[in-house]
Amino acid sequence: TSNPIYMIFYEAFGFFFQTFILVKRKIKKLNLWLNFITFRRIKISLAIIKKYKDYSIYHNLVGLTTLASASLQVIILSINYSASETGLYSLALGMTSLPIQLVSLGTASVIYNQLVAIVSNSPHKLYRNSAKLTIAYMLIGFIPYLIIFLFGKSIFHIVFSSDWIVSGELASLIALPMYLQFCIYPVLSIFMVTDTIKIQFRIDVFFSITTTILLYIFSTYFDLIRTIELHSIALSSYRITMLAYILHVSKKYSQNLKSISAADK
Image 1 (cartoon, rainbow, N blue to C red):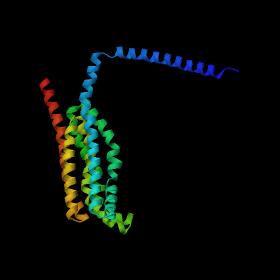
Image 2: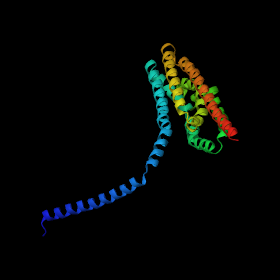
Image 3: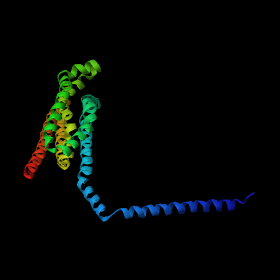
Image 4: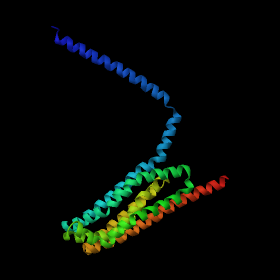
């Protein structure tokens, strides 16, 4: 029989030998890779990073701002109202956000790709196309949200039970701001394709703080129905402003490119 000590020695030697060969090959590949990288390529890479850093930073910050604002609003309601009242609002919010989840979020990536293609091929047509997209989403979402606005109480009574009529009333109250969000969400990528996402972040932060403070004030002095009614007015004002500004950004972008094209001619 062979000595176990020698067997261990042979296996250890084989392991280190294989490791040495592997490391040698990796170093050789690394040297080739380093030789391939030139100062010019590094400079180009840094320029690209600098160009798109706003997108990576502010795109994530916009998402965090939206999430933080929504979470704070639920916390405020849970502090000033009972758990059952907060539950009624949560159900109303969940049901009215279904079209946004199914349609707006589901098609947002497709719309973004279309807008990128427009900016690449026909940038002067960005405003016209973004206006058409906005009108299309307005038409798609109009009927569902009109039904919720007019018959929210009846729908919740039939679908859930008479215990949830108040939730249906709340759904009617938040139908307008949710409809506006339905129309806005797909065309928010205008800020990304025009490199103005930093402006979107500033607008979102300002209005998120403002509407959250207003919700706290309303919920301190009014009952749930009145609070949601007033908060919906504030949210609708914010979203109408945002929608108008999105179209303004796309129009300004198209006009600037038309001016540049005319000057070149």
